Image 1: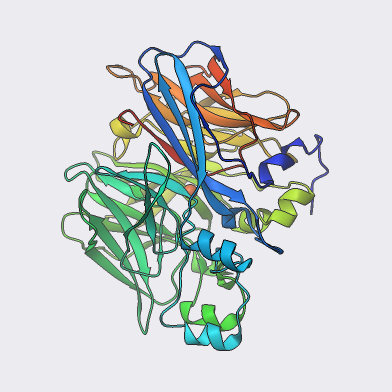
Image 2: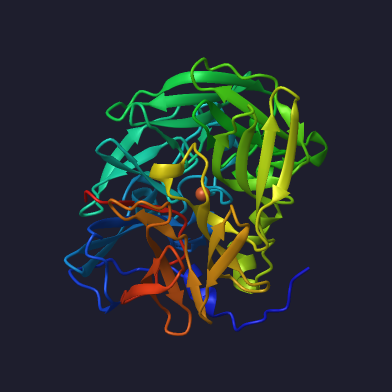
Length: 471
Ligand SMILES: [Fe+2]
């Protein structure tokens, strides 16, 4: 059932194609940037929702645009550029959607679908997350192609590596010891398996470190990491991969919600690659783990931004978000896994929806922590608040301005800072009335405004990005 819109749908601009590509030496700036902020925010996201006469169907499907906000000497420069890979080029040449996306299929015959069943073709529309691996900057998605780009010019630099499976995540973790990447992929075939892999900072050859056999893989968008374990939550939104090419339905529409399976937690030992039998708990769904760590008593904590079921995926079809919003709220749940007892308990941490959460990753990932910063939507509206969560006090504070729609707040730690929350947040915000976007810089301690700088166009709503002090 749809909630009546409480506010005029001024967020709609965030789902419109942006044609302009610009390079601007200096953006108009209100406020004063910290002198220490010297580097770049690099973001990816969908920015074009049509190819010729054809339209993508889902927010997750639009063509990849990269954005760069660079800070130095108190000023901000900006650039944006489409990722001109195979998906882009083939689409421009043919005027048709060339490759399957999350919830959009290209126009193909049954014969073509069957003929590509065991050697599926994937595009390189990597619009979910930007990741740094050694000196490489990658734009990643769940199709098994990670692409590289130049962080200065945003120009496409080709395929970086291919994961060992057909489906992967755009949320790898950093292996602190090697500076490489830890991620997983679903290998599909006569037997399906989850494959966890490591990729060195200079390598293009993933090394599989652990395998778990699975009949029907779950949709998994991210995972947690402690110093000893990979925390892998398999939600009961599952697929029989062999059915995908035959079903005539786009990829995402082959997943089925089977709540009776429950959610299975696997703990994969990072050292040995061994995983004990999974521990099953109540069914839930999530895109994003927030953090995980080990307690002294041997229990493992996994904080996850959860939904009761995957109906949010349906809600994010473009027709739905353009027709009025009824987003199921997600909440931060803390799961405490006791491997010895084979139990999982959970509690809700704060009294507000919370998504796209970020932490002080360099200091706190895999470790006990206190703060997270994310976004939330007022019921009946698009995401319109930035939330600071204090997971120790179990409290939160918010930034909100009517008619403004913020994206993921990226935490940037102040060099030499002593407290976990010493730093700023960078969030791209749509001004729904002016139909342009701005970069908002908030003090991470209290969400007070530090500065904002205006972009001359709107920036379609994106997903994730990173801050690098070296580019
Ligand atoms: Fe994500």
